[in-house]
Length: 182
Image 1 (cartoon, helix red, strand yellow):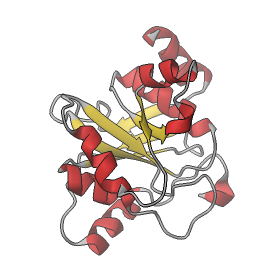
Image 2: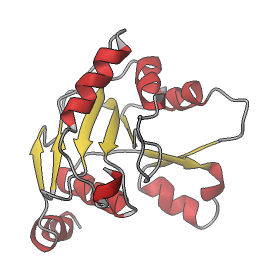
Image 3: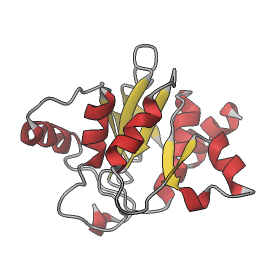
């Protein structure tokens, strides 16, 4: 399967991986991975190919309603974890708890929180990383250059403004599948 994924990702689709190409998986077993810009449903499949070609085990969350028979077996097999999204819960704490008891858990999220154009990122991923005491690893969904650029692990500080400026700089000039949403 890995050979087929490499053929599709590199040869058929023409993508490449640059930067921290193994997501520091030899040193970092737990992290919040942020993927941006998230402008299309195509991003999910590029992410699946990326994790297959790099051999990095990653996870994602989805509303618990998606994790029903028969889909729940597929979603769990590819790293999915259900989350209860009903109101009145501390979702950051609930998601941060997913890291507990796991030897390896790399949660991939889109900081925009949607595939549409946004002026500001959601902050949940940042507070999840802080609550779980794990680094953030950034990667691009750059359809213009057909590349996934991967950062070194970044540990959030207590200066949210500086941290967000640093993360936004990593994505400067990156164009998503739908350029108007980038």
